[in-house]
Image (cartoon, rainbow over all chains, first blue to last red; front, side, top):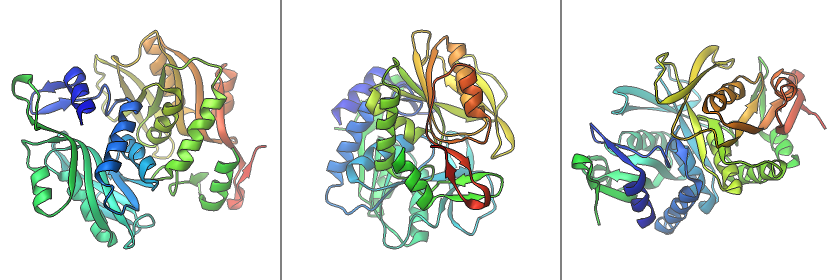
Length: 190
Length: 190
């Protein structure tokens, strides 16, 4: 997606440890016009699959999921993050590891909002090692729902998540794929 | 706002401790069509004030803030919650108390995204004791920005926040005000 590539080149910063900071438009300050264009693009890329729910995880996935859901005319459900190990009976729960925070966390979704009639589209801001996506897939699995696609704004193509998910047979659509960002030079896959 | 009142009466649940659970449409599963209508209503109610930024706090304020920002054509900034007491030099910080979690937390906003040219509209899902709103007002104050309004979906009229903020001179717009919810009967102010 050219608009997003352009914005990344203009406004993103690269930090040590393969951190791509996009908090001026994607996950602290939010450019809703850009997010709207991204939602429209997801609708185009997933126009061939049935979608009944959009699933994401708090907090940085919520805005993109909402702006995408407008085009699909379906509800968003965001998984809540918790450090609590106690599993509640009325939630689906999965574990994921955050490389950014170097810590495990639990994702929880109420059993009331996803079931085995659902076709779930997973939306998130980043796809790197695929930890968050795998956690959300596990929640869909517990619900008996089908995961019909995984859409993310920025895939770090040099990390394993995208290819791991594609090899498992998921339809993965990344609006941009960063091939490398050595020495602060951001190179996209074409 | 009649549409929101109707939805609350249909889908919300009242729990002990004055908890109004609206997670089927407002803060876990998100009805983006309803959120869009709420954003439009905020635009109507704040049409007389200049707005350059919408400010909210993660996670449950993000969706409503985004759907509102579309109508104002301005960016959203969401404050990040942190338990960390260390104050970073590049962020504005304020403390708030969460009655839901019985704990204090710190809100942080990067200094890059609000400054003294900004006219800030604060948007959140609930207004009860006004703790989150006061925290966001403090962040705007640190930035030298003007708070031109405070909009929330649901005000608990029997708690002090709304009137406290109005007495301080803020323009507060609540899409619905719950007057009481004794014995699970939700009564709105007209």
